[in-house]
Length: 402
Image (cartoon, rainbow, N blue to C red; front, side):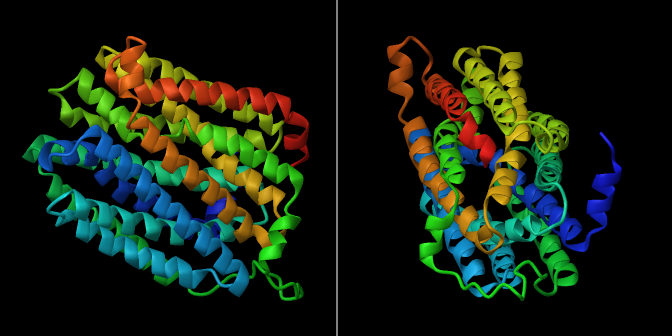
């Protein structure tokens, strides 16, 4: 793969600034995310079911914010103010989590964090969609930078846990630092809206414009629904690891770093490849990798099989995450790019709310078929992935027209 295209994109001020902002946001999130399930269960006395409900609810909050932000930036044709609000709220959410005395306050702080993420995501997507470059490469580059930030944050959390023990609140408080750095980059490098909405375009946004989105876009949304039932929170992988390795909690952030390394290694090459081959083949490849992760999740009983879950789940995310955004950016009209992403995130959030809630209640199903209780979410994931692959093969013509 040639590096000149990547270097050229990183010289573009909006692309470079957004990539670095996502890098620091990813660092802050991973310092919290890899330890939060254990923090809820061990220190606050929560359960797997309560974690599943919390994760599903706060993810849904994020997607509600993305819907709101996507419609607003199309209606008012302003992106940067929304990006600023989301970035400031992110700083405060990390501070609030470090002080949370119980699960309710964790829920509030995580909801605020996810709401802030939703406000950030829509204008970020709109800015990148307006860049004159291959969409698969642009979105995969941003995703890779976010993953590298996740990797570094996971390493920091793991080293801190090793040196000072399970001091969860200290790590949560330290996660404020990268969010402040991201805010500084925003203030210095993205000072005004770029010309994404052309002045000559006199079309004003209306809710009726949703009907003008192409048929292939809606076909793709069905794929999203099926896929997201196997995109339940990675926290369930952590709970599976805890059941297999109950005395090695300090290794879990490093396992997450394996996840991020695998995703980062394949995101840019596959993103670039998706600009040149049929997208259905890329999607089927990515979903197949997730099926392998689910199979390991169902039958894991050793440390190396647990690592295999993280490896294949990471490969799946790297192979598909940038491609999903690129398909939306290609298929929507310019004046409806925020709306197209808003609908995408709304559907995704609603399905993830259901998927995380169901995943937290699948222990009985796992026991019924003779599997350990933490294997339930992965059994559900296999069924959803097989359905997604079959639908892609049946609707491939409509997807390729998109």
